[in-house]
Image (cartoon, rainbow, N blue to C red; front, side, top):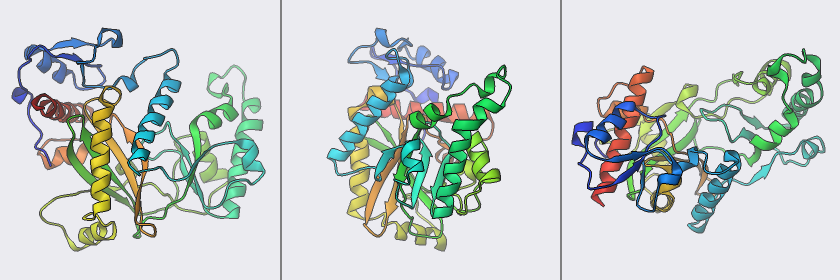
Length: 344
């Protein structure tokens, strides 16, 4: 695990151009200027030697940003598939297919545009399937017509919203009593900053962050529990590669075969793909994987060009409580990755 550097430790510029959007720490922006880097925030000013602190996947690189992100994400997934890493079996959401019972139980309904474990639901039995149909039918056919037409909050085409954002995905049961995923934080210099195993008890579903979540919790409740491992939903992070673990942590790592060649292949593939797509992903990227013990295989769930770095920061003695502290920690992690890129 790389030590997080301070801004003073950033090497001075040798004429490099840095693409930098202001959604990250402004102190990093000032530090880069003080070290002599040329900073740009317009994609049209970049060239094949530009270093991307923030990826252009986040930016308006074409007339339709959402379509652009889908295209790039698909290309990245194809690159991982060439390295024998796939997503769980995934289908586009269709209301017609849903009401005609064309999806095989169990499955996960997930909003791929949401982070933090929001809008991810396990449909595990026929009763859950019926609840989901009822919730979607209510959203599509009734809700938009039953509220004040002048209230802009409800002027939404919910069928389009569901079709554009949601996927139906194969359910993979994790190997312990916990919901688990693994996050790898990589750099375009083909380095791994850290790896962590996220784990969370599958407590009752409490996703009321959206109308669909509220419906599936309060009106047409699902019988199943949450499948989310994210720390934002109460989960914990276990950093991989530490010197000492307690008994529970050792059992968690062992159950996921973290020391196996299979896991090492996932790490190597993630680093290679980030190196290949650095302009899209930026200077750091989080790859989230889930482990299927029965098939002894790792599957890609998501990738994040703005991953949370809380436990990594705390391990390095950085506070991570306020918004300003989180921005500073993220900025210093980006600076650490930049220093590795410049070395190579």
